[in-house]
Amino acid sequence: MTRDWSALPSANSLWEATAEPARAFPVLSGERQADVVIIGAGYTGLSAAHHIAKSGLSPIVLEANRPGWGASGRNGGVITAKFRLSFREIDAAHGRAMAQRMYEIAHESTDMVEELVSEFGIASAALTRTGQVKAAHNETTLKAAIDEANWMTREMGSAEVRILDKSGVRDETGSDIFVGGVLNPGSGGIHPLNYLRGLADGVARRGVPIFQESPVVKLRRENGGIVAETPQGAVRAKQAIIATNSYSDLTDATAQMQRTLIPFRSAMVATEQLPRNLAGKLMPTGRTYTETKRMMRWFRMVDNRVIFGGRGAFGKQDSQAAFDALRKAMVGIFPDLADVPLAYKWSGLVGMTLDSVPHIGRLDDRTLVSMGYNGAGVAMSSLMGRYLAAFVRGETPEVGLLDIRRMKAIPFYPLREPAVRMVAGWYQFLDAIGQ
Figure 1 (tube, rainbow, N blue to C red):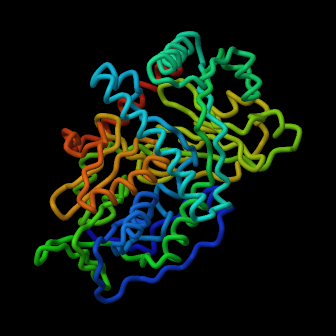
Figure 2 (cartoon, helix red, strand yellow):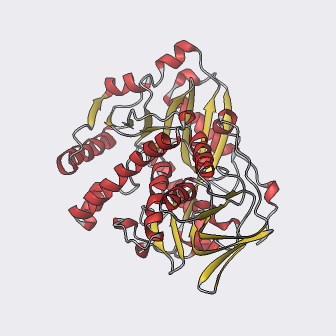
Figure 3 (tube, rainbow, N blue to C red):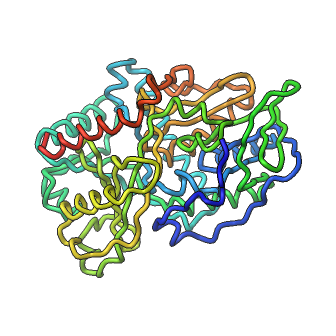
């Protein structure tokens, strides 16, 4: 597979417009040696590089475009201690011990973000840990959310979970359309691109080589090690980490990983800055918010702008129809925004897996991978970098359901995109009729 790397578009995002200047990294030229070559300079790759270097080993990071060009710079900046598979579902299918371990991993992931922000002094990341509200759009989904919250309190010890009635959610959001909700502590928000650029700068300042515009076009074994080839150079290493997630198909070297992922495009819009009186009325507590519909929408306030996002966009490029649908949904929740112009529209790919959890571990004795974050990747990918470093050192961290040996390939892979469209369309229909 060949690509015109200079033609790959950047996201027209709020994050790009408000980020700290990006540090320029060189293009790999010639041959280099390392203990570990890391493919991908997103949260996973940079966190792995940091933790590997702390272990006394020498990593090199190769990025096909620029650090933060992919999902790490295109997401909504929401930090959550959860998986797409609920802890109650994990308990029912795999037992209490597994549910407890997954609960520990989820909360470790949000703490990892805070640890990295602190260690590298990334003030521009604007990290908050004010919590997240799940707002219910009908009594059925409210009951399900309350049942889940009560189970979490009783079985997992989440004593801080709070049930909100209609007025409580109205006070939280400024919207009258929800019938109630649940407040989960510990979640929060971040400027995702500033976080990424802070990680890249901090890792580079500690001596880790990072090369941009250096796509790995071939990954091969040689003399008991592994060689990552780029158009202008190569890195010879003892081990390799694939940290490309939903963008694994950018080159043939990592394209096989795409067969374990279900593609889903997540679209986002951000308004112009709101008048002060309106900004004070909507989401005044500064939390992040989700709703309970199947095609989940989420929203938050950043710098007096409403950011509104959701899944269900189709295709490999930005979709005006998806942006129009988001705006309609946003105004449905917040009628006061009907005349407020949108300032930014962007999208990015989410890596979904068949079992709704990420996977990490060894593909073979030389190659490791972590991917499939299912829409909760800011925190989880940050933590997986630490676990990847443990695997590199020869350790076997307890990763529960994330064990790569549980990972399944997508059946009938060529039909994945029409299948996603069909399922998403059905979900959208059920949401539209209030089911």
